[in-house]
Image (tube, rainbow, N blue to C red; front, side, top):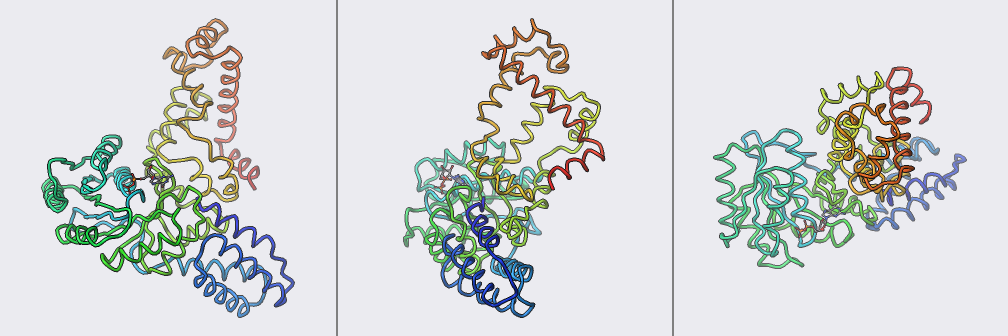
Length: 438
Ligand code: GDP
């Protein structure tokens, strides 16, 4: 996420050689301009940003530090459109959220992601399928709801989306749900019929939030369509989907600046956990390569069972980490979302995100092998890897469809990893780790 924009910023920053003079500042501004235009930021936004950065840098004294802090302030300023941040609950539940967007923007998927995000934060959520335009949308939402184990209101026999909205709202109120999320119809392009329908759904729902899902891959088109929807519906937030793709990134600046509606979330992958809260100063930190530990910690605390984590930590310390713990940890990691989106949050590691794009916790061939190996073990062997003598290893290799060499390799890796984890689990260990990373 943000790789392209972040890389071009950092390239610009690295090229800057300040010698306290105006020429150096001009060169830096030129680099910045190139990188912003390349990232698909609208030229008017670029012009304004550059003039503010120039003015502020001159005011404080020409130098790299002042230049960077002016850039950081102005980016944060641009990305902070007036309105709410993150998810805001209504004082009288249910909080009603209406989702809007063009067909294919990722509206249905994002409705599911948002429901999952809230479920992890212990909220009771009802999803409602009022997109009766796209053929498979109702069934798709039903499947997503089943997958994340959230209730859904989906009834193919109702042909009128207004009626769906009415009934879903009644169910959400009667059933004491905390949040109702209504997926509405999109079209390939904006037309009057679509707008009329959504406006009528809005009338019925009186939503607390109207989120527009904008496909970031469509660049300036996303900005234009968001502007039209905002004019008709008065959006309370925009969710940028597909930010993990080849999006150039500038669209985030465009939406905040040109439309004046706050970005509330960002979609960073196809899976349910791949949704990030958009908090401007944290995002700017990531853009400038400083990582975003706060978001990472917040995400982890919503997902990870603290008691369980402490238990595992104790086991690691005692050198008792076994294969069952490993499988359990893998499940927990999956809830955090794609590895690539997490890496960008760790300071200094964002450049690795590109290299990690193919690592997928469920589908990587290494993880598949390890899982096959573990599933061929007896419960006792999983608890105690030391039991694995040669004849047991042979049996496991056969059961898992692996060569004995592969089995040995994985077991060795596992042992080393457990040893490393033990070493780093003490206070001194953390210091070692920090030294290693700095
Ligand atoms: P809708 O017509 O707006 O409801 O669109 P869908 O929710 O069906 O999404 C269209 C496609 O975009 C699907 O293949 C989704 O998996 C994909 N998609 C949605 N959000 C994201 C995202 O954040 N990242 C990626 N890579 N794909 C996404």
